[in-house]
Length: 85
View 1 (cartoon, rainbow, N blue to C red):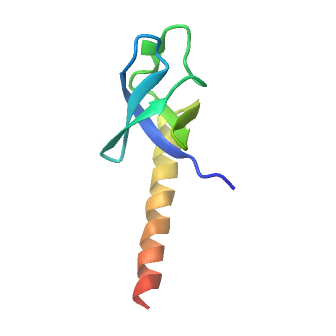
View 2: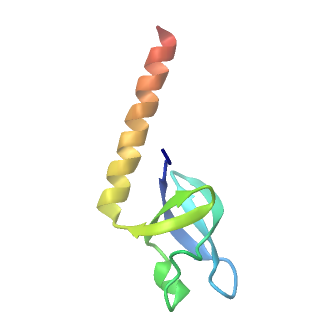
View 3: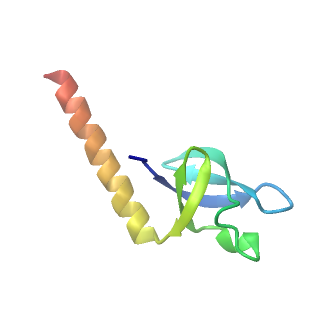
């Protein structure tokens, strides 16, 4: 099973539009946008993408991104509670 993490594209970092910076819960990472780059890479700015091993796999809407982030946070909380037992 693969785990994709939602991130918001905040910057296109190369002239070809194949690399960009995303914000993932306040953490910024440079990722490869080649799989989702549209005819105009800047069209990805402020859009959400699903990220796996440094690659944006697909564009998702904000509602789906928030729901996924909330679920991941809830899983982390459960894991931390289990560690205390």
